[in-house]
Amino acid sequence: CIHMKLGEPDSSGRRRPIPIEGSNFSLPVDCVVMAIGNSPNPLIRSATKGLEANERGCIVVKDDTMETTREGVYAAGDAVSGAATVILAMGGGKDAAKSIDRYIRAKS
Image (cartoon, rainbow, N blue to C red; front, side, top):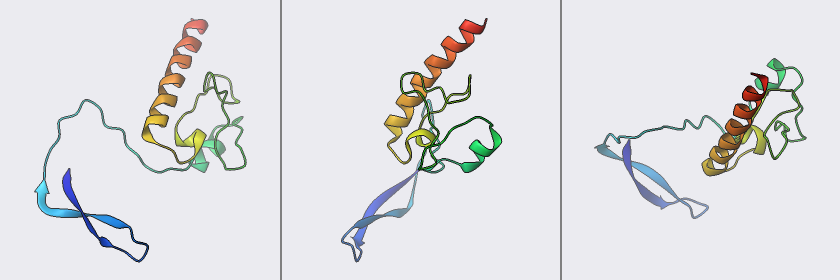
């Protein structure tokens, strides 16, 4: 990690974060959520037959289970909603995990 400070306002009036040199530090954590983008990867749909997407390219799921249009395939996060918060993505992931557990138990 590195500490940041706000720079001077740009032409839009927004102050952007600037790294503070020499302020690197480590932070002990239990979990790291990697954010690699905020839009669905089109390769997911092309590599997984039977996935329906909406007009924005987001994967279509059942709201209550997070199951896609392909049986046994679940999705959550930005792939479903488009750009949103990490909290919403984690909530969707938790809902999908519960549904996946139910699905696997029903198949056993």
